[in-house]
Image: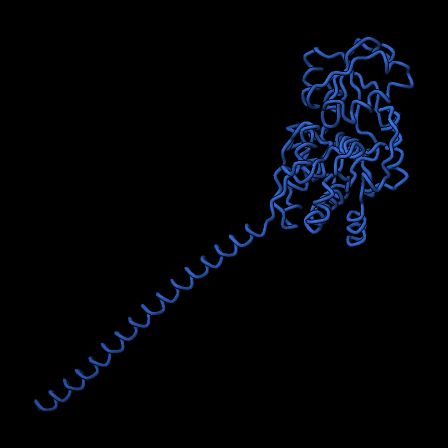
Length: 352
């Protein structure tokens, strides 16, 4: 009897040892699995970190110098803010500079592009190694806004007109727009630095008239200032805003230039087919009511060059205008100041 009990207890003892060993192995397996999971999690995050670092390094930094914080160069601002440039592997730095400063920075290599197309073309005529590669506005995008006391264009005689920049394209556009009324020689053009300052000087009453681009032209009209002249209705074809780079950059970094152009083109196409989104973008960027932003959108679409490039004949018109305004013989040809090859290529690739 005791032997059976002992035997029974022995069996129980052996079973107990088996269960203990089994539990021990289970605990060991659990610890191994836990370590494996921890290693997998750490590896996952390390891979993600490496990929993020790689993506950051893959983003090529570019610098673009608009001449105004306004919306004259809106495709560039849109391409930068909404990720079109980033999706082309580019990390943009937008640096607002006065027209002449931006052109000088481009020539010295401090920036990669300027948006002051018309002024850069004038600089190219005078020997600067620059070329316009994309044109945003075929039609002049400048409005002359005046104080309520000024009723007619002739009332500007003897008065100051505030203009952005420093004797760049906008100055010449104002004079050309005033020529049909015969007051172009009887006004004093004064630099306001940029259109934002011009808008402020109109509000403060320190300027009887100013030349403004959207959104400031729209805001001024809504505040009751008189919209005297839309230069685009008087001048006709007048390339103003676009993308300009150096001849050297075109030759040495064509792929970077090509990607920049493609991003801007995609931003333009997006704006044309996504009005509500662009109106929201304008409203957010300039802290304005949607109704005002909607009017700004319509003004931008009115002056937009649908192809984003110019024909040689259109460039020649601008060269002739430069010669007439500077009273100098212009020997430069369209190919000396503009090269829209990559923009045309982008048009074909995107099926525009």
